[in-house]
Amino acid sequence: MMPCQKQAPKIKHLLDFSNAFYQDLHGYKPEQTKLQSIPEKHWKTFCQRTDLNSNSSGIYLPRNQTAIIQNRNPLSLFHEYFGHGLFCEQSLIGRKLVDLEKKLLEDEKQEFQNRKFSLKDLEKFREQNKTFQELKEFRKQNLARYEIFAIWTEYLLSKEFSLRDEFEMKYDFLEKENREAVDSVINFSESYGDLATFYASGLARRTTPERVKKLLEDVYGIEAVNNSKLILLTGSKKPFSDIDLFACSDYLQPTKNSWLDLAVFREENFEERTRLFETQVTHPIMAGEFITGNKNYLQQKRIQLQEQPITKEAIKYNLNLSEEQKQRALEYPEQSEERKTGLSYSETYLKNALALKQGLRLFTKEDLISYSQSERFIELKGGKIE
Amino acid sequence: MRQELEKSLYDAKPIRRDLIVYQVGDLENLSASALYTGNLPKFSAGGAGFELPKPLGSISRFESKPIEISVPKVGMTLEGGLNIKKIGHNSLTLNTDYGLLRDLYNFHPDGSGSKREITLKKPTILIDKKSW
Ligand SMILES: [Zn+2]
Image (cartoon, rainbow over all chains, first blue to last red; front, side, top):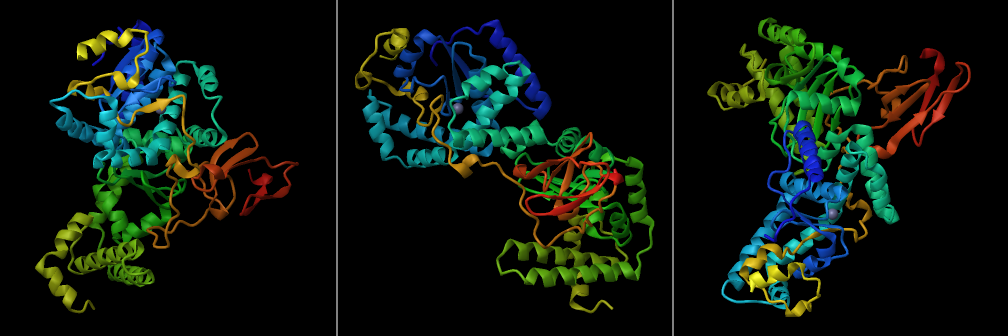
């Protein structure tokens, strides 16, 4: 690594404060990203020696995950270190850029291990290298996402440090299209909050009940969340899967996108479906993690499911649902997502109906899956139900 | 040679690009995909990659009846799929889906409690100021 300018206390303060801000919001902060600060008078020469474009006010190098800033410019620190740096650590498309660079680096080390070379030699080698071609294409495709995220990061942190005027001045030059792209993300963050913006940008989600509650309050408003009877976390909580939520609420709207999947049942409807042992509600009641709402109510519903009688109506209801889902699914073309999903719902309802018929209370999808592999299920499925 | 390069790092005299000689250790710093700030390329319009919620398919896991317009509450769904985002003093902020940023509406019923039809891009909703 090049000799590094000792960081002034001001940068240290910016780093400490921002790190704490990220840790609190996300449960993580930049860890692998290195920071290098170059005095302005040496910027040009530095860039030339490392073959970088010196017109830039800051640079991020995916190869060694290094943020390079001119002097101790706070906005550059936000952009390069917390913007590109964090994105390359905590998003899939950021990680891929780093991986491709590292792979290319290995190829280059092989090639040049025993000889000196010029930039021309390096360029020549890269032009015929497959990884380089892939990297070039990948960077081109995702450049807007990297940059918009980094600019939005500047916007976000400039507020924390009262540097909004500097931010506005810096991006005054943006062309119309770029301005619009940046504005749309800024508007999104103003409407739905910072966490939602990070998640919509593809950043890793460290899902905890507290964080999800905050996210929902930002998106739907505190009142809507507080008025909801029950909100539960149901999914895998993997950092790059969507956040699966279940709500019994008259105040929330269901939604599904790449990072948030909120199923909502109106209160009355929820009661009805609980009575009929419908898996769509029994699964979250039994397996869901409490986020907010009425904890006693959840406990009541759990007891109700264990104790209420299994009625003929409930069995029939689940059978009918199975048939209905199947019919609807078959309206979609073969191989389509809709058909696959519909058929799998249909299957789940059928399994549940058969289990209920045997007096079995299988509340979760996992229970139903292991049941469908049992002999009793296969026997029943072959025969008639009623 | 590497040491010479580092020594010359802060040397203000420009060197001809093709004359610099590198060795294997220098590769660590010769990134092939540096991200620059200051000379941004034009972003393609749809390239922002901001993901908006997909419309829900017709195989739906829920049947949420739209709530009739009565006393508006935050989070309430109105006819036409509009969702109340904020209630201000005599004003409502609505959006069609919380992720569709372009479809955020603000409106203020005027007059002294008279019914007023407000036409948004598509849905038309009836606002009765008396009811709230
Ligand atoms: Zn950048």
